[in-house]
Image 1 (spheres, rainbow, N blue to C red):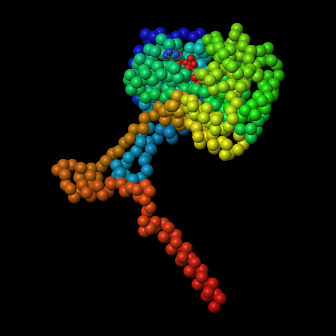
Image 2 (image 1 turned 90 degrees about the horizontal axis):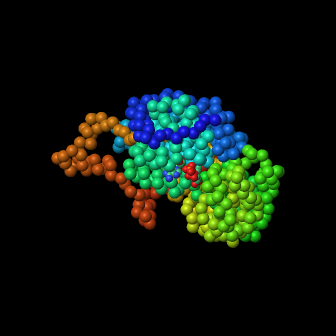
Image 3 (image 1 turned 180 degrees about the vertical axis):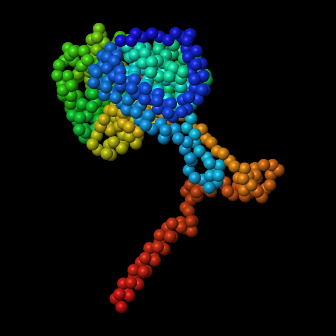
Length: 514
Ligand code: NAD
């Protein structure tokens, strides 16, 4: 296993200068070059899959199949999509025809923003670093990528492979913790993409503001689940519990808490218990390593234990903490109130509070009283219930009868709203994040001969009026006013046509009767 070595802080300004120099050579503008680097990145993953699985197991105790299913394969798929689409995505786009402007050939050039900084967290350390990195490569940017220090085995492996397989003139991986990230953030970048928690996001935002650097923030928060008793309960219970078991609930999209009708709470918890028994035929505390991921660090185990100790709810399932192994049994706490310790912060671990409510309106109020979540989940078979929840709330994503997996659904944007983040990643949306839309026209001289010369002094009222006539927008009728009958020409046209057809038909009937 590779050993993690932090990049010396004093080397960081040189890396930064090297990458700006590399970008200015223009090599990343070539689509063939981008495709070559993307393919190298995809093979870097495919050829070292087993090493990645082992590193993720070492860092997170994560079962191997989970790493393949939720991290490595979706990432390879995303890179393949970028590889196959980069030519189309990067093509200059002609704008919609406009009689006024078409002689100038208005178009949008899709250009790389420049040199990007990408900072990733620990929970999906490969996907969340190399996914945005692939988008930056596709967009033609140079990039420094900075993995989390909390996943030493995975970060060391990525450091080794990126330096071996990708062009070091324009792509560099910097390993380190707070001092290294702070140094990176002191420097000017053409775009920063930060994935992680809101507290650090504020530091990143301050640093970006110093240089007016554009910023994408992929954050987290408390993603709520609202349960309608009219749902497929066994499936709902399985999916929700899975959202807390996968990666030990350390997923930005994990269901954070559940709002359930008061009289339905015990039925719902009993369904969770049945799902738990199915998932863990052997007590998870005694099950072999690799049955379920563990919590990333001692500090996070202690944080989660503090929340559990402080709750005034009732532990209905699990509750055991093995601090030495950093393992927490998936835990369900019922009868939780909105002011409970478990509701004070994003849980980001295998603990699920269940809050009884008296109505769907109360559930909506609870969601709306908090920061907009990264995802809002509803389990129901009633379309009206679903519409009521989605139409009266805001969140990064609105998901019915599922949790978490929408991140992997092709062609959907991924991003939060407000404190759960801003900007988008994955697929074409990721490419757009690192792309500047550069407006362009090329105005031939003969256009002046037609009308445009009116703009030059000395001003000629007549010519200006002619120009104004061409470019003056005609507004629709004022709000509240009714368009005159004459202006309703489509209606008149339809009435006239109906009249004509009726007349012809009537004539033929009368004719044949005669
Ligand atoms: P983390 O501790 O690994 O930190 C993330 C990054 O920030 C790391 O690279 C780290 O080195 C850097 N960092 C930490 N402290 C810093 C400081 N003081 N100054 C500069 N850099 C610093 O991971 P985390 O932030 O605890 O990750 C968990 C959070 O990330 C959760 O809130 C989760 O919801 C969110 N998340 C969001 C997404 C998403 O795509 N929206 C995905 C995964 C995780």
